Image (tube, rainbow, N blue to C red; front, side, top):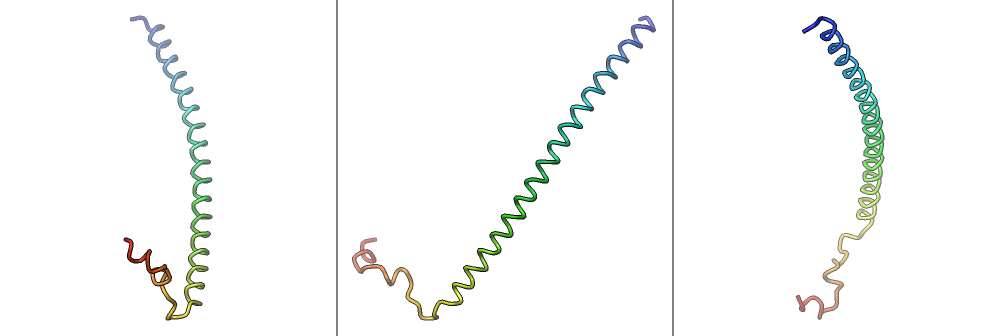
Length: 82
C-alpha cells in the first residue's frame, strides 16, 4: 500500500467524520429544542392540573355534608335495572 493512498483514505474518513459530526450537532440542537418545548408544555399542564384540582376541592368543600349521592338521585327503576 502506498503512503499516498493511506493518507488519502485517512483524509476521506476524516471528512466523513466531520460531516457526520455536523449532522449530529444539528440533530442534537433540534432534539434539545424539542425537550425544552415539551418541558414547558409539561410544566404548563401540571400547573393547569393543580389549578383544576384546587377548584374541584373548593367545590367539594362547599357541598353540604349530607348531600345525596348521584346513585340516590337516580330514578328507582334505574337503580334496580342493573
